[in-house]
Image 1 (cartoon, rainbow, N blue to C red):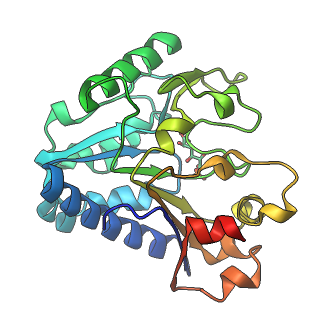
Image 2: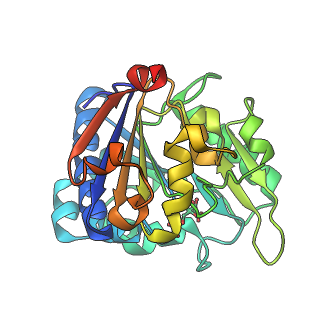
Length: 268
Ligand code: 6PG
């Protein structure tokens, strides 16, 4: 289960399959890292895609089997709203499973969306540094990401200055009204994770997913294309609708695991 610098791609009939697999991976990784380091650190995303996964984590099976005292929850991004706002990524996780679990409050590292964005981002980066210890990049055991129709991940959008940010751990993202501003982890943090877990569902993601996977046809590089784990691995859990644009090279591995080491992939 330790990180292997590989790309894993699994294609499922539907979002339910993605969510079940993601919950299995969550359990396996938590057991692995808790046995290794007595803790499991994970950063969550918002949006619709992870809702079913979070609901599974709030089910009796996972409430009973997960070692909640040793799991630390962070967020890949957050909207600049109070914690009880319906747009809050914290609220999504809290209402679907955290509030039902025995996770200690000290293990919940919420981004303070109610604060002024620059301060919230700076405070979050300080909390991450204090938790992981020292000035170097943190290594999250797992980061769960969705992908927008424009290929954004966390709150890193196309043409964002964050695509070139190599200094900050977390940054404010100023959005055009009526969108709310956001706070996001930066690419160096995401690419330093041991396991990146991408959940992609629905035909509206098919076009951008094709441009992420099939570099040779890519004119623009969507943010998801910037996910290149330095030492960790990246697992794409994709449903049939989102995978419909992928070439046969991928489609023959429907419902199976396709392991390509990053080195082999980069050689192609
Ligand atoms: C957020 C997420 C964002 C999300 C994508 C996909 O705060 O909304 O972190 O990056 O993962 O927008 O959203 P859906 O899962 O709703 O398609």
